[in-house]
Length: 397
Image 1 (tube, rainbow, N blue to C red):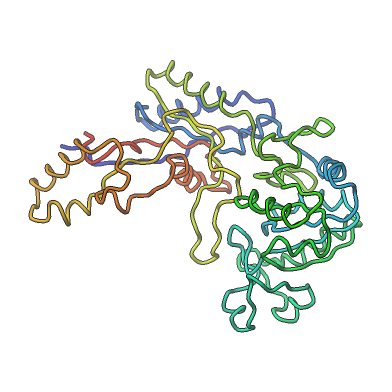
Image 2: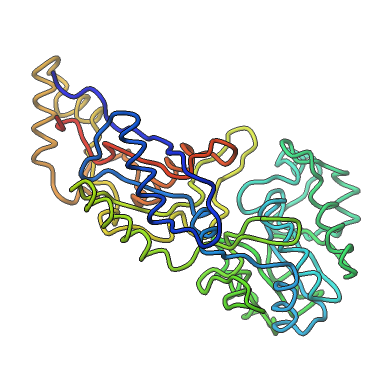
């Protein structure tokens, strides 16, 4: 019988990772033990992935509020700082904001609306329409925002992020002024010193601010790019991709991951004789249809991966072939015709109608999304994911 199972994604349990642990050894052993206990074989072109969280934990890549505050003060001089376009997240930004505020006398907090960059909504589009507000041009003070929209709480968290972020700033002793706008230049009315906290649009925001006359501009990706008092750091992403570790500490996005994935690949090859692809993954990319939140708070989905994961899928759309090229066929004849088409497909299908509708994303982004959904973010205890059959197609036996 032909093979009946395609892609399989398994969450693999692992010990709780601590700073200094040999992660290459732990991941390799966990994958081998999982395969043994569940009775399956490791194959060529399997994918083994691990969360960025356990990589950073093993690296001990942490920083405190005081470390953040010291870097902010050194870069901005300890006076007024405009903090613009942060995401609305207790996990992702609350400790960072406390550290930023502690390094300044006043924070001008400018929030994008109706939602942040990753889809956390302050208010609904319907509410904007009802009040006649244009989010592309209208700049709202806190007073005007409250007058129009009141005290909205996040649907899932029950938090009024405007009130929450203001309280975090004021608790450090810093003054706070809040405005709402989607044009980065709006903050320059209040201060010429700006920290932009957007993730995927950060380079454009910096360019716009500098062209408009901002005097000091840093992105949050430029805070803690080097150690402060021996702290953790990330030379490429700074505080981007960080998570709350404790009330006074963040875990930073991992650094120097390439050697790790290549080490694990070599260990698995030695143990099994199979060439397995290995990657580190953070947030995948998918949208919650109810809460409207995109899981895209990390600067990249995968900060490191082995060479076999380069590129994008090169796949034919089976239903296109069935409905067009082979519309007159059915049963075994249709199956064999489609198999033949797959076997002779071009090495690059970009622009070909037969590939229309296949997902045009990097392999690491697609696989990272699958891993993120498989491992979850709670108490599953499976920070390693083992994927089999991802590179199979309809002809694979």
